[in-house]
Image (cartoon, rainbow, N blue to C red):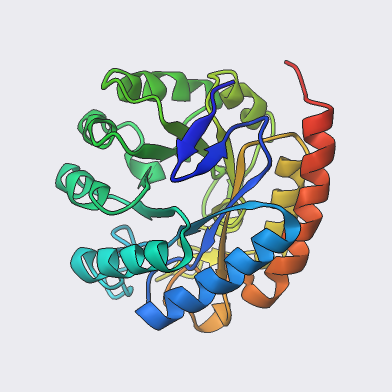
Length: 277
């Protein structure tokens, strides 16, 4: 099993759980600092490692009218401030090859969105930054198809790779999460992440926006962590119903301390009795 050093954290499938959490999109500096502060406190209390995540641009909103975020320049300034203030790694999405270079100068983890996970030039650009690359498995891919995705990033000499499960398309406006995919992707040797919030999305389910089943996000997190994985990815907000994006599947910030504490119990049991396939 590979272990990846990310700004002082050691992330791996047999290491203590890492929580990657934050709002869907950046709203303001004060808002980002508030969430990062509360999340770091909750993770430290539970013994979890913490990475702050947020997007400076939501480039694949369902409709043209969807709010997209602060933009790359202001967004990266906010992420840098969060990183410096709390001493935690930060993660953000990239959507073009040029953004890989620009964001790679600031953040610790570049995230390849699921819809772009097979774009060879994007993967090579991300790999060439030398930063950790978190690749979300496309809703259209089988878990074993990620072997080829991994090879593309490895070709740059970069082996700081994380693989994220976020559900598979299942008919119209629906996703299903197959937990068999987590140990299968772990056979690559790389850290595996479960995206507990996007896996309960209902893509385009509200016509002009995406729906979701927030109540099942903790279920997904608990199920995945009980298998023994490197990290869980959770979007959180103090008022999800009024968030600018992904509100229906984000977990209330006030509920996160209890959830993280619970997940660490599952993590300890799983790491003491690892699954072998």
